[in-house]
Amino acid sequence: MDIDLHLGQAIKGLIYGPREDGLACLLEARDLPEPGNGDNRWLELSEILKDCFALLATSAGQRPREILSSYGLTVLLLEDNVEGAVDVLYGGGKKGKNR
Image 1 (cartoon, one colour):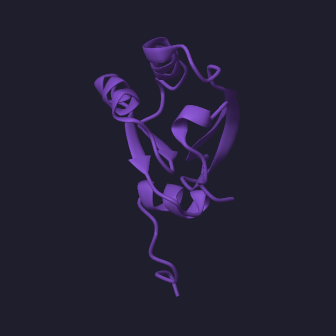
Image 2: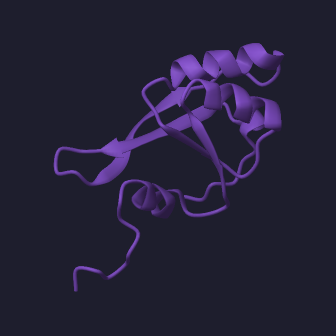
Image 3: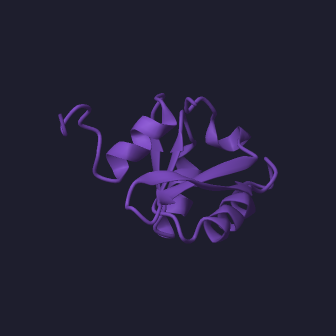
């Protein structure tokens, strides 16, 4: 699955994290606030994602990035495979390192 959506258009968030064996995987999907509603949307989003440390999107406005950052949520802008990006965030990313 690719990261291919502007943050302002997202209505679902895929939550990744470590499973019992330490490998990162998809844990759940969460509903996000409807687009629009200005700063309140980003405040609501920061509450919904308060247990997360990063949010991946292809693009995001400066204001949402500022608000989310003030709540400890880093917005990372990239177009990539989500599983590969999550692997890098959780300390992997070196394909074939265990060969």
